[in-house]
Image (cartoon, rainbow, N blue to C red; front, side):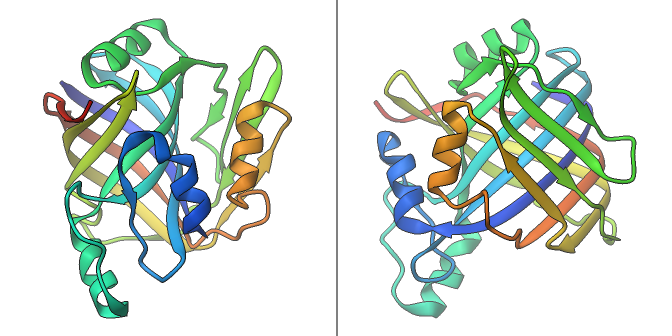
Length: 230
Protein backbone atom coordinates (compact mmCIF):
# COMPACT_ATOMS: atom_id res chain seq x y z
CA UNK A 1 0.00 0.00 0.00
CA UNK A 2 1.38 3.38 -1.03
CA UNK A 3 1.05 6.83 0.52
CA UNK A 4 2.35 9.34 -1.99
CA UNK A 5 1.88 12.59 -0.04
CA UNK A 6 1.24 13.25 3.64
CA UNK A 7 2.17 15.95 6.16
CA UNK A 8 2.96 15.18 9.80
CA UNK A 9 3.51 16.92 13.13
CA UNK A 10 4.61 14.93 16.17
CA UNK A 11 6.13 15.08 19.63
CA UNK A 12 7.96 12.54 21.80
CA UNK A 13 7.64 12.29 25.58
CA UNK A 14 9.44 10.36 28.30
CA UNK A 15 6.82 8.60 30.44
CA UNK A 16 7.06 6.11 33.33
CA UNK A 17 7.92 2.70 31.88
CA UNK A 18 5.70 0.85 34.36
CA UNK A 19 2.67 2.96 33.41
CA UNK A 20 3.39 2.51 29.69
CA UNK A 21 3.79 -1.26 30.11
CA UNK A 22 0.45 -1.38 31.93
CA UNK A 23 -1.21 0.42 29.01
CA UNK A 24 0.10 -2.07 26.41
CA UNK A 25 -0.11 -5.20 28.59
CA UNK A 26 -2.79 -6.66 26.27
CA UNK A 27 -0.29 -6.98 23.41
CA UNK A 28 2.42 -9.34 24.70
CA UNK A 29 5.01 -6.71 23.73
CA UNK A 30 7.63 -5.18 26.02
CA UNK A 31 8.27 -1.46 26.34
CA UNK A 32 11.74 -0.23 25.33
CA UNK A 33 13.56 1.75 28.03
CA UNK A 34 16.25 4.12 26.72
CA UNK A 35 16.77 5.09 30.37
CA UNK A 36 15.97 2.91 33.36
CA UNK A 37 12.31 3.34 34.28
CA UNK A 38 11.49 5.52 31.27
CA UNK A 39 9.56 4.74 28.07
CA UNK A 40 8.97 6.83 24.96
CA UNK A 41 5.45 7.82 23.95
CA UNK A 42 4.89 9.57 20.62
CA UNK A 43 1.87 11.68 19.67
CA UNK A 44 1.44 12.41 15.97
CA UNK A 45 -1.17 13.88 13.66
CA UNK A 46 -1.13 13.25 9.94
CA UNK A 47 -2.96 14.69 6.97
CA UNK A 48 -2.99 12.17 4.12
CA UNK A 49 -3.42 14.02 0.84
CA UNK A 50 -2.68 11.35 -1.79
CA UNK A 51 -2.59 7.60 -1.25
CA UNK A 52 -4.25 4.28 -1.95
CA UNK A 53 -6.73 4.84 0.92
CA UNK A 54 -7.71 8.33 -0.21
CA UNK A 55 -7.41 11.61 1.72
CA UNK A 56 -8.05 11.59 5.48
CA UNK A 57 -6.87 12.81 8.88
CA UNK A 58 -5.31 10.56 11.51
CA UNK A 59 -4.02 10.84 15.08
CA UNK A 60 -1.65 8.32 16.63
CA UNK A 61 -0.52 7.39 20.13
CA UNK A 62 2.52 5.08 19.87
CA UNK A 63 5.16 3.57 22.15
CA UNK A 64 8.66 2.36 21.36
CA UNK A 65 8.83 -1.41 21.99
CA UNK A 66 11.48 -4.12 21.86
CA UNK A 67 11.24 -6.71 19.08
CA UNK A 68 9.43 -9.81 20.36
CA UNK A 69 11.75 -12.44 21.79
CA UNK A 70 14.65 -10.11 22.52
CA UNK A 71 16.02 -10.15 26.08
CA UNK A 72 15.85 -7.09 28.28
CA UNK A 73 19.17 -5.25 27.80
CA UNK A 74 21.43 -4.89 30.84
CA UNK A 75 22.98 -1.60 31.89
CA UNK A 76 22.86 1.87 30.36
CA UNK A 77 25.03 0.92 27.37
CA UNK A 78 22.90 -2.14 26.65
CA UNK A 79 19.72 -0.07 26.75
CA UNK A 80 21.15 2.45 24.29
CA UNK A 81 22.34 -0.28 21.93
CA UNK A 82 18.95 -1.95 22.15
CA UNK A 83 17.25 1.20 20.87
CA UNK A 84 18.68 0.56 17.40
CA UNK A 85 16.19 -2.27 16.81
CA UNK A 86 13.05 -0.89 18.45
CA UNK A 87 9.68 -0.79 16.73
CA UNK A 88 6.64 1.43 17.19
CA UNK A 89 3.51 -0.02 18.76
CA UNK A 90 0.40 1.87 17.60
CA UNK A 91 -1.89 1.92 20.62
CA UNK A 92 -4.60 4.34 19.46
CA UNK A 93 -5.33 5.47 15.91
CA UNK A 94 -8.48 7.54 15.34
CA UNK A 95 -9.27 8.56 11.75
CA UNK A 96 -12.00 10.65 10.16
CA UNK A 97 -12.95 8.50 7.14
CA UNK A 98 -14.75 5.14 6.95
CA UNK A 99 -12.73 3.58 4.11
CA UNK A 100 -9.37 3.88 5.87
CA UNK A 101 -11.05 2.65 9.06
CA UNK A 102 -12.18 -0.59 7.41
CA UNK A 103 -8.90 -1.17 5.57
CA UNK A 104 -6.74 -0.40 8.57
CA UNK A 105 -8.62 -2.76 10.85
CA UNK A 106 -9.14 -5.64 8.42
CA UNK A 107 -5.75 -5.63 6.61
CA UNK A 108 -3.22 -4.54 9.24
CA UNK A 109 -5.11 -4.83 12.52
CA UNK A 110 -4.64 -1.16 13.38
CA UNK A 111 -6.93 0.07 16.19
CA UNK A 112 -8.72 2.67 14.10
CA UNK A 113 -11.95 4.34 15.17
CA UNK A 114 -13.92 7.23 13.75
CA UNK A 115 -13.46 10.65 15.33
CA UNK A 116 -13.69 14.31 14.45
CA UNK A 117 -10.06 15.37 13.85
CA UNK A 118 -9.76 19.06 12.94
CA UNK A 119 -6.18 20.07 12.20
CA UNK A 120 -4.18 22.98 10.88
CA UNK A 121 -0.87 22.14 9.26
CA UNK A 122 -0.68 25.34 7.22
CA UNK A 123 -0.06 27.81 10.04
CA UNK A 124 3.20 28.56 11.82
CA UNK A 125 2.04 26.46 14.79
CA UNK A 126 0.63 23.07 13.77
CA UNK A 127 -2.56 22.19 15.67
CA UNK A 128 -4.84 19.19 16.01
CA UNK A 129 -7.72 17.99 18.19
CA UNK A 130 -9.50 14.64 18.54
CA UNK A 131 -13.19 14.75 19.51
CA UNK A 132 -15.96 12.19 19.88
CA UNK A 133 -19.52 13.51 19.81
CA UNK A 134 -18.32 16.91 20.92
CA UNK A 135 -16.17 15.52 23.78
CA UNK A 136 -12.49 16.37 23.49
CA UNK A 137 -9.95 13.61 24.03
CA UNK A 138 -6.82 15.63 23.26
CA UNK A 139 -5.59 18.85 21.71
CA UNK A 140 -1.96 19.36 20.72
CA UNK A 141 0.04 22.23 19.26
CA UNK A 142 3.52 21.76 17.73
CA UNK A 143 5.97 24.54 16.91
CA UNK A 144 8.35 23.76 14.02
CA UNK A 145 12.06 23.76 14.65
CA UNK A 146 15.23 23.95 12.58
CA UNK A 147 15.44 22.32 9.14
CA UNK A 148 17.14 18.94 9.10
CA UNK A 149 19.52 17.69 6.37
CA UNK A 150 18.05 15.73 3.51
CA UNK A 151 17.38 12.12 4.39
CA UNK A 152 16.76 12.85 8.08
CA UNK A 153 14.25 10.55 9.70
CA UNK A 154 13.69 6.80 10.07
CA UNK A 155 13.50 5.27 6.57
CA UNK A 156 12.39 1.83 7.83
CA UNK A 157 10.43 0.87 10.93
CA UNK A 158 8.46 -2.10 12.20
CA UNK A 159 4.99 -0.99 13.24
CA UNK A 160 3.14 -3.21 15.70
CA UNK A 161 -0.60 -3.35 16.25
CA UNK A 162 -3.00 -5.42 18.35
CA UNK A 163 -6.67 -5.95 17.55
CA UNK A 164 -9.07 -8.64 18.77
CA UNK A 165 -6.28 -10.38 20.68
CA UNK A 166 -3.91 -10.66 17.70
CA UNK A 167 -0.61 -8.76 17.70
CA UNK A 168 0.83 -8.02 14.26
CA UNK A 169 4.00 -6.54 12.78
CA UNK A 170 3.88 -4.41 9.62
CA UNK A 171 7.14 -3.18 8.05
CA UNK A 172 6.98 0.45 6.90
CA UNK A 173 9.29 2.30 4.54
CA UNK A 174 9.25 6.09 4.93
CA UNK A 175 10.63 8.81 2.68
CA UNK A 176 10.41 12.20 4.47
CA UNK A 177 11.37 15.62 3.17
CA UNK A 178 11.06 19.17 4.53
CA UNK A 179 11.79 17.87 8.03
CA UNK A 180 12.12 20.25 10.98
CA UNK A 181 13.00 19.29 14.57
CA UNK A 182 13.50 20.99 17.91
CA UNK A 183 13.72 20.19 21.61
CA UNK A 184 10.42 20.69 23.42
CA UNK A 185 8.01 22.59 21.21
CA UNK A 186 4.72 20.85 21.97
CA UNK A 187 1.75 21.67 24.19
CA UNK A 188 -0.79 18.97 25.09
CA UNK A 189 -4.26 19.64 26.52
CA UNK A 190 -6.36 16.68 27.64
CA UNK A 191 -10.14 16.71 27.74
CA UNK A 192 -12.85 14.72 29.51
CA UNK A 193 -13.11 11.74 27.17
CA UNK A 194 -12.13 8.33 28.68
CA UNK A 195 -9.05 8.17 26.44
CA UNK A 196 -7.84 11.39 28.05
CA UNK A 197 -7.81 9.65 31.43
CA UNK A 198 -5.51 6.95 30.10
CA UNK A 199 -3.16 9.60 28.71
CA UNK A 200 -3.22 11.35 32.07
CA UNK A 201 -2.07 8.11 33.71
CA UNK A 202 1.12 8.51 31.65
CA UNK A 203 1.60 12.09 32.84
CA UNK A 204 1.09 13.59 29.38
CA UNK A 205 -0.97 16.44 30.82
CA UNK A 206 2.14 17.78 32.59
CA UNK A 207 5.13 16.31 30.73
CA UNK A 208 7.45 18.47 28.66
CA UNK A 209 8.14 17.09 25.20
CA UNK A 210 11.60 15.69 24.63
CA UNK A 211 11.41 16.82 21.03
CA UNK A 212 8.93 17.76 18.35
CA UNK A 213 9.09 17.52 14.59
CA UNK A 214 7.21 18.38 11.43
CA UNK A 215 7.41 16.72 8.02
CA UNK A 216 6.17 18.78 5.11
CA UNK A 217 6.09 15.85 2.71
CA UNK A 218 6.07 12.17 3.58
CA UNK A 219 5.77 9.17 1.28
CA UNK A 220 5.27 5.70 2.79
CA UNK A 221 4.79 2.10 1.77
CA UNK A 222 3.23 -0.62 3.96
CA UNK A 223 4.09 -4.31 3.62
CA UNK A 224 1.59 -7.05 4.52
CA UNK A 225 1.07 -7.63 8.24
CA UNK A 226 2.53 -10.70 9.98
CA UNK A 227 1.03 -12.23 13.12
CA UNK A 228 3.36 -12.11 16.11
CA UNK A 229 1.09 -13.29 18.94
CA UNK A 230 -2.42 -14.68 18.77
